[in-house]
Image (tube, rainbow, N blue to C red; front, side, top):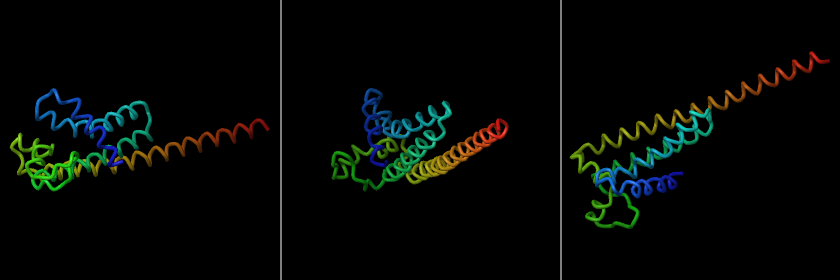
Length: 157
């Protein structure tokens, strides 16, 4: 699923290219995290706990990806799409280098990465809890229906 996160990420750059350099750089992260977050909300509002848990798990993976990517803003060691190899090319193409540099927060790289990692961890644990709750709720509902069916069979006999 980690590789799947690149689709909304790159789409985010496409849909925000009109919005200025900062928002264009942030658009990848916004969509990478925002698409699964929006789907999670949509499913949960429609009582789709299992699908909500699945998309929340997807959001957690996306946030872990962002934590890794944002944490690379100072060192520029990750391979980027498009094959940037020199430091100059990486500085131009690295979203989080550009975001933090434009905001004059490049020194806060570890803090930003840790913040994303922490949110990713909470989202992942929440996805597991939500999934377990949905499974338990379905089990209780099935048990209750089975008991009602057994009682109706006894009363009709």
